Image 1 (cartoon, one colour):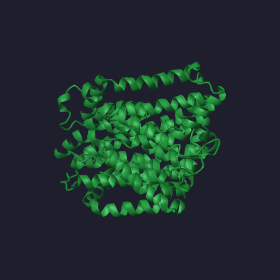
Image 2 (cartoon, helix red, strand yellow):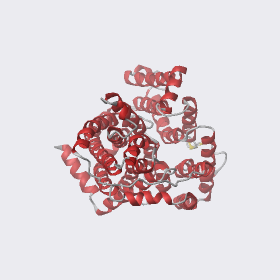
Image 3 (spheres, one colour):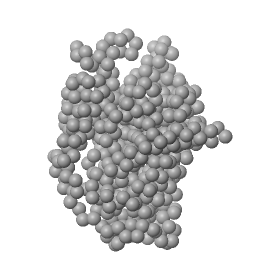
Image 4 (cartoon, one colour):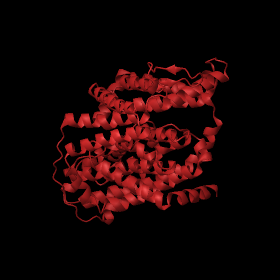
Length: 499
């Protein structure tokens, strides 16, 4: 009964005309971002952060969430029609989706992707609504040592499950945590790492860092690649799948939804892992695995369901624990902090309309995406003809205006450019900037809980070992790091990501 009351509050919040409009704008932008390769949800949300600061918190979260799961839809459209995945999680969809398009079944492939995404998104949203309250109650009962250990485990998991060198990802994570300590000390107020600059007394500007590392850096990267986007678009025929198509897609959709829901809560690229894992599972379970890669509808239904389910359930650790499972959610937590809201289990108690409004908006957003994507296929593909050199000045101008609008401080514009150059340098050296952003957001929370734990134990670090839950989580973090660093495991990870 309490769940129904909470959902009623959530729908009352999300169905207001302002929040409906914001949700529509979010999913529309998300689809656009998914269609245009080379921009991505992280860069887009980074650029839009200044706008969200003048919105109510619930509206800001609804828009950013819509962009996030909207990209999962949009990326599949170009993956199917022109074999150009707009998002990393749509790479698997292109394998069979584009083959179906070449066989004259582009409409069926698009409908399969949209239906699988909607079904998975709906189920995963319901799962978030069911699991969030008990997990929040559990989170309220744990202390600072458990929170510290959980954050350490989450950060370590995010780098061991992601692609690339574990050592480089760990270095970026540590650097992010260190950058999070710039500014005044939490207790004494003493300035740390400010180098005498008064602009750094309040710490580094989160928005400038996010925009620079992802927005400006993406421009440098795409200019270097000099990608050409001329493509031959497959004709879109009938959108309605046949009865046989429905029979073949039902079980993969169910399995993909279950797999994606489970993997979505893991730190790192949950949606990407889910889509690849679902494709591998369907290929192993298929009676004729040789069909995969040649237009098997199961190769679309499973991965598309998995990546959308993962995108929804990745909100569980953010909403209940205040721990982001991806860089996009780290940006959302940063937006909450800027608005004066402390992320974590207290949000559901202190801001119930925000908590449940966001959850209910996910279902509304998925319904909007189902209606938007199929009729507007032609428009999305036409956008691929827009030349990149026309987008770059707009993105740079938008970033500079956004940073200036926050505090009217030119120093932050310099920070934006500096972080853009740093991000480009890191990219050239094969360092991923995402762990740096995660470390920067989680770093201050990590320090707070570490200090509180030491206060409870009068400075004795044994408190992190004598508590069973804390000791287990720290041991798991250490084990994950050791296993990921083993040569055999490292070769296996590299081989898996290459596949």
